Image (cartoon, rainbow, N blue to C red):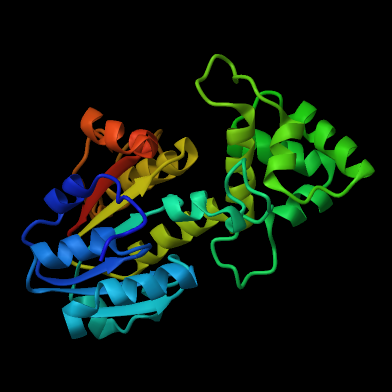
Length: 308
């Protein structure tokens, strides 16, 4: 069954989890590209997966139906999946993957409102949620808009963009992504090869879906699950997300947690739960980027939990 979404870093993911036995958790199932390939490669692997997009779940159920009872799929935020699994299920988990980007299908579908060319203004990954991009744009104060553009879009002209949006919505409610992109305008940001509209849309999407909060909660749930002999791979597409993953993995690998100015270790020097397997983030090859330009910003970091 052909997927409408191209899975990024697929060969690299298969390399990380090659020969895996037991249970694999895919926290962001999407259209089943990574999971299907891993189930095919590792014949003794069982999959527990989740997504919060109904369309993606229905597609993946059909795509993975040939794997029978090796597959269990939940509708859930990825930060909540591990919390609903039993202690017995968690005992067998040997791999976890989270690809926390937006799927190509979500970006390309006009009615989802993610693209700067969309006729709607939505950006909800879970369409059952009431809060959308239209609510952010038409109800947030100028100060709050400036804050999310600065924090999540890293836009140096965040205050000016927020002022333009408030001025426009005072005349007429903003109802489409296309209209919003026109208000924000074109051009380049500080010499970067991306337009301010793209970065502003990214910031709005992060706010609508609480993406950084979700990532932090996912990482905390993994650490709290008391897993043993488990590889964790996180694929991110945003510098703020990658920074969270990098710093979290660094803290997980830290054995001594005494203050830097401590004369000697008093913490027991046994706090590490495993080791970082990727000194530098794994990125897409030039061949992959040529075939799928959206993979150019993907970064994967991998940690191996040994347990304590």
